[in-house]
Image (cartoon, rainbow, N blue to C red; front, side):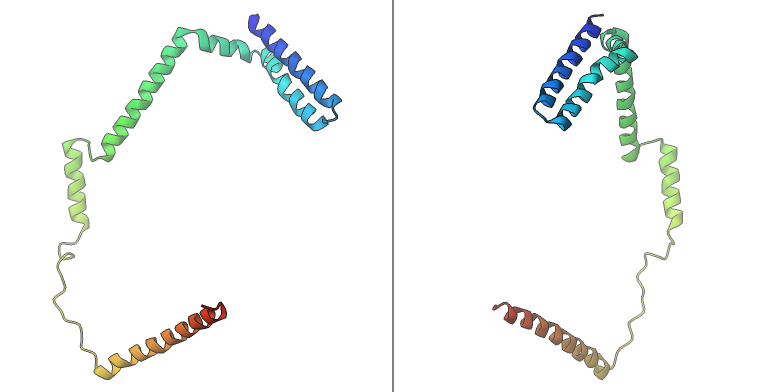
Length: 150
């Protein structure tokens, strides 16, 4: 009953402020204030205030929140242990066996063959091509720098 009276008083005060704001010809702000002012009385009329009051002032509700928090902490701990490689010994052995089976035994051995030798003339031509391409890039950069006076 007291919460209903307080909410009604807050709504009445808010509507009074909205009327003063409308008197100053600030209608948009007055409408917004009136909307906020009607919220507490609407919550009382729908019964939400009584539900919140029961939620806040009952010790069994707080014990329930404590149990939910404990559950969340246990979930986080088990996930952290699982990510660090925890679990049973059988699970770790099975995972290690799958990993060994997934890689080919000869995959880690280095190749023993040598790269084929390239002729000297063929090796020199790509360098000239790269230098010519690079020179064009530098000329573009030089032109940009000269344009900006650098």
